[in-house]
Amino acid sequence: MTSTLQRLLGFGDWRETAVSQEAANRRNLRLLVQLRWLAVFGQVATILIVHFGLGIRLPLLWLLIAPVSLALVNLVSLPLTQRRDSISDHELMLALLADVAALTGQLFLTGGATNPFVGLYLLQVVLGAVLLRPSYAWSLIAITSVCFVCLGVFHLPLDLPPYQEGGVLSLYMAGGLICFLLMAVLLVLFMTRINENLRARDAYVADVRQQAAEQDHIVRMGLLASGAAHELGTPLASLSVILSDWRRMPLLKADADLSQDMDVMQAEVERCKAIVTGILMSAGEARGQAPSHTTLVRFLDEVVEGWTTRDIRVRVDVTPWTGPDPRIIADPALRQVFGVLFDNAVEAGARRIVVSPTVSDGKLQVAVRDNGPGFPATVLDRLGKPYNSTKDRPGAGLGLFLLANVMRSLGGSVEACNPAGGGGEVKLTLPIDVLAPEEIADDR
Image (cartoon, rainbow, N blue to C red):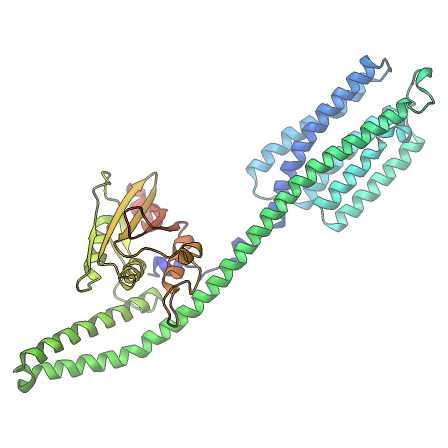
């Protein structure tokens, strides 16, 4: 079985993180729906004011067909954006053509090309240029141009009162001013939202690229670690054989101090062999030691017991947690995650480490707190970045970098802080289901 760490670290396919144009169209269609509601209310208000307030006779019922139709288009489009993850350029083009058709019908009934609101065609063109691919945008320009020409020939005349003709403050100029203000307001609203979407997309793309670069870095380190583990296997085996021979020699066994040193050396060799085996297992190369089913607390207890360091006390504190102990997969790679935290704490000068697990709302949170000097501000500011360390040696700072990528790939997060009581604390948060096999999740 491939380990959980390898499967979710990003050694797989990153294609799902690519920014989709159709997903962007979904957000743009939702924005277009919002603007269309403004247009519907504005059209209805304008028609009623002109007809009843200014006393200009309009084909009221025919004119109201356009906003009613646009409202129906909105009622169809809004559920579409909620049910589907992507919208094609073709569908977005149809949505804009619905607006063009409604505007054309209203202009046909109110003077055609002589109506000052004919400038609203330009608003449709601008929206198409921003939202659509160039081919669709040019098509929209052609369609609106044809509509403009046809309205110059085919239209119903607008019956204006004689006192509205001529003069600086004529009704035509007032209509042109209203059209300009309407276009300006809608464009500002629209472009502001589009710029927000673009900034969000750019930030997302930058984050994806950063993650891809980090994943490439991890892949290269994984290959180096796997190769190093293979190469270390032979000398460790040789050292183990030599130590076994020495321990059987009567002359060496007679020296109590030397015999004790050989026992320590043998234990350290066995620990190195276990680390090498764990690296190969994480890479999917070890066989016969598949991850086993266990419970969360038992797993943490085994991790603490397996991480043996003299003069360092590590304990699991479950007092804040009163819920059931969930069943999980004890993947050896996950042990290395906690080993990284313990090693970092010891290297920083800690002599006591407390592991506190809690489970709530389907999420697991494990707080690892030590009594060391805490994290420097530079480390907290760049948590999860490679080579982010105060240690002056090559390769320092990769532990938390790997840990942060593991948690992110699992759908979790890593937070670090310096508690008020002193020391340092790292909180690991992730969905509990990613640690459980499907059959265990079904049982729960």
